[in-house]
Length: 262
Image (tube, rainbow, N blue to C red; front, side, top):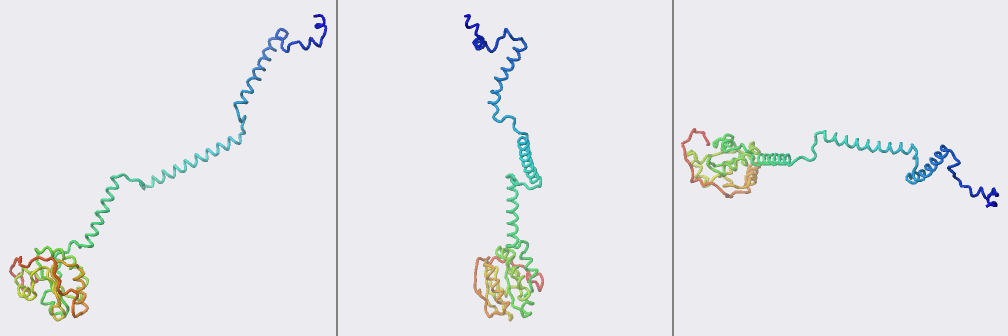
């Protein structure tokens, strides 16, 4: 023991690095606080993968976020403005039904107006017709139609006859003779009228070129009238018979006026 204690080097090696009995309380607190800080620092460094990122990067992130938000807001503004413009991209079923119904009715009305010419009746054709005696004396070819107010086929063909008449009214005479009028008994026998409507085609001299009876395509009437207007010696449809109303159903009445062709 005397040797160990007498050796100051050995004694220095065995001296503990921390002796609380030789240090003041203030030094002990300082030492403990430093050890605590030393223990916590590595933990903080391990949890923070990128310690103290530069402020410039944070600013860039903020700028990008602002740009994204600005783009989103711009897109939202454009969308809202397009919606506010009044155009409905996806209408509901009720609006679709109304649009479809309006389109259908409009197309049907246009078709009926152009194809059937509603408003033209036998009475209108009679008002536009030329008196029979005058037609035979003016030197033009003539189309004579025998008809009756009760004749269903006559009423159906009235719009078609009107179209042809308007096209050739300056070149051909158009005459309407009512079979119910006893005034035309002689003409009924002369042209052999048994069914109506009965169309007789006369040349410039009043000679019969042919006749068409009943419901037939407008083309037949059109081609016959065109041949008369051009002064042809014959017509393409000289003897044609379709569905007609029988002339035996005549409802005879007295002549209203001497020049009446009704």
